[in-house]
Length: 196
Image (tube, rainbow, N blue to C red):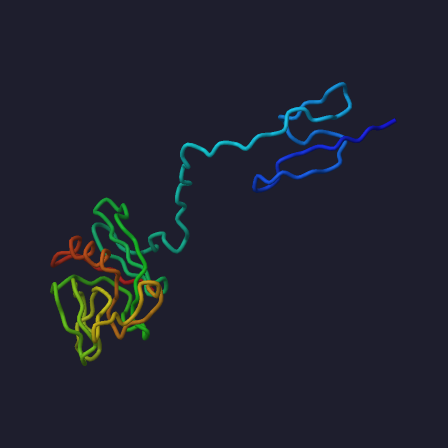
């Protein structure tokens, strides 16, 4: 004749569950006299001493675009709304989301940093910005470059969470830490590559 035993076992979040079964689900349970009676109830496990972070896996969106030049350069992808700071050996030193123009006003190609300003005022009273690194001009003649998210009337014109989507009138907006990193990376003459 088959016997069934009442067993206690850990489930999901550590809450004890009770079920009818013909075997012990926990490796810590012990059978006594072959009847299936659990004599050692599983205890709560101690918390792990440290949690090891999983390695970061880069997605296609963060990989350096093909045909983005060679050597030390800044790469801006209009379709990905992302910037890469690339060392002379081709290693990516930094990549981050940005907000470029809503009108895709840049032509793909290679440019060169020609002007820099720690503080600047946008055209048509569009706000103030910092760490402006200019590399080309728009069709109306205004300089286009990288800078912080502009501030107008004491407020940022967009949130940091909106970086990664087109939001600007022509330039490439960056979070403050990224703007400082690009400022330090790109002196006059630095190559800037724009990809579709």
